[in-house]
Image (cartoon, rainbow, N blue to C red):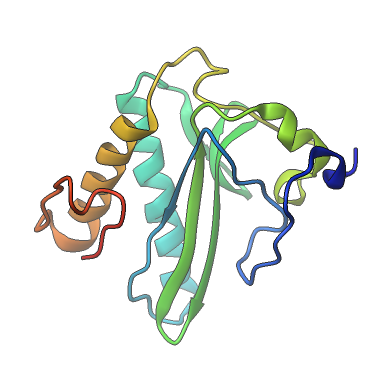
Length: 165
């Protein structure tokens, strides 16, 4: 299927991870922090993002959330539930992750998500776990704040949609 048949805009970016889809029903988080430009520091940053998503999913009832060796992102068995794509320039991370909460999964059928031809995608809704993006956003923000600031950050109605540490 051609992505153009779904009437979805295609935008090129400069992050790792090949092609992906962002749309309604996804929680997309760009965690922009200082990261040393060393391979292991970048790998640790990606690992931290994955762990934040894994911890959030487990707390929401998806006990099978895990890493799949050799494949970035977060997985339920062999189905990707969250994609991670990061770029580091001038010591600062860009981009982040997209967690499939309740997207229309048919939109992924027009692409090869993350360039993985033999893997499929899933969502919290498809796995039978009801959740709202608002609730999950608060969970993610709290975990990000705890990881990067030791919890020295408060979520309020004024800063929930755009958070800066």
